[in-house]
Image (cartoon, rainbow, N blue to C red; front, top):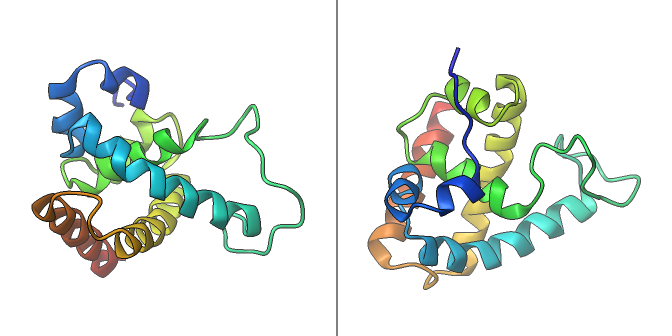
Length: 141
């Protein structure tokens, strides 16, 4: 249906494309990634994607959707920028739409927590734009 895939590493090579996809410069993305990574790892060390208490240690598996937290944050920011449908985003990341929806639901919370705890991590207009996008997604769910 949608013939190309998107990845953090691929987009990172071209700053203009990266900004179009995420709304952030790569340097802003990296600044946001550090606290996001902590929130992500804290969550997944205790819970599964479905919110159940984790029975075993979390690890990146061969069939993991995101090989690292940069890919996960990139996925969320591309969607929350608001220029791509969930179905198209899922296809571009080679996952199915229901799984994309589960991740986006969780990432909304994790990204919101990250921004709450790190108010000065991004310039205020960018911070507000991401918060607004997250709130729009929250009302759509």
